[in-house]
Length: 422
Image (cartoon, rainbow, N blue to C red; front, top):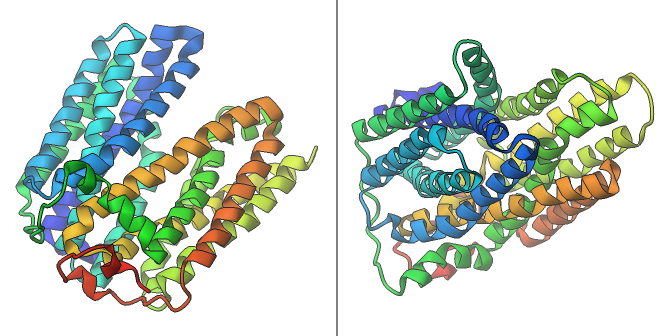
């Protein structure tokens, strides 16, 4: 897997991604502490609103950035996004009003909505070989999982020496380093695209492609299945561990670590598996596995007593991580083989936007339903959502769908019908 790091351009881009992720993780911890300083007991509602603003920025702005990404120099767009994020992070320690937090969070996440899909669209051009690109996707998945484990530990260590405001400085340094690494890389020229039609039409081109391509319609359903599972883990881990099982606060990161461990194990194994097994088989198996895991979680949640429940919860969380990784890791391969090279920026932007729209739906469902009707109700509702989405994906994705890269990846786009996979 690490062989792809021999490519200098990809090595610099991957390092930029990792450093920026660590910086973002530090900002997440610092933002929680800043919200508590400003709002006190209402800090939870401030963070909830900030998370909603983040999702709205992703859903609304990513397609617009995808529409213009092909017209702008890639390095300038990526580095400029990093510099905007750096400026927002440096400003956060000086705010003293909740509305100021919301504005800066929106600015920071708007820049991320420009950076992330553009970055994802660059990698297939840097690593055109399918085998190398698959390994790059696994490395990216590992980077996200390791960040979720490493950043909180790093933040805790730093907070023993400095105040939380300095964590924002660490975030800014991370974005500066990311910009420098991007500027030091020589990025391949994107495929020439004919910029026709209105800006609004170009902004929705990626979404239209998703709705007209069978395998990408299935991906929409798969995004919803993953969002249902990740919402349970992200929103309700603390409720499962602390309230339902009576565990200590220190056990919450242990449960989250189990989810990350399951995801990482699958990400390490998938490059070899995908050399022999189709994306369709792997991704649909992951989605259907979520149904089984939700059934197990329902049993753990319904059980009233028993010391076994903690071990069972850790196993369930690890299985959630494994199943989600089975769906998420091959996603880039699926998009690359489904769209013309000229349409990758808008397609990755559409995936970024539409997947976060699913989270915008499932995160409040997990939190509000769990609080109003109980944990078991939230598990049942989200489990039913994941099951329905997985079955819908199975129905939408043709069994005879060609798994080899299509000619569309090298053929100029004439319309969505080029990539339908019919």
